[in-house]
Length: 75
Image 1 (cartoon, rainbow, N blue to C red):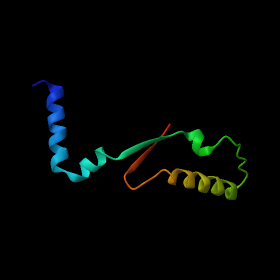
Image 2: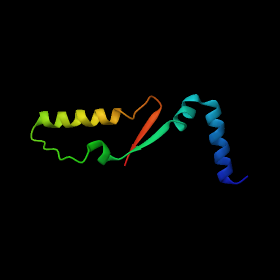
Image 3: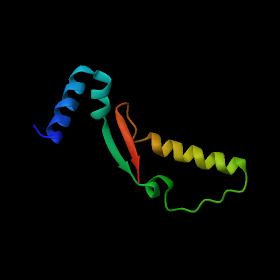
């Protein structure tokens, strides 16, 4: 058995005995473009209120595709 096959066997063994690790490996992954989240519009941030409003919008847009077993990958 070569090293790569041994690593796969160990990985499968861990997944069969460790439910948390198994669930981590099989979470759904969604690629989300930063430009899709931020949008194409221009933001003018002049004070803390503007920054908070911008961050709230980003949070809402990031929460939309996020499910309990989903991992968002920003690119």
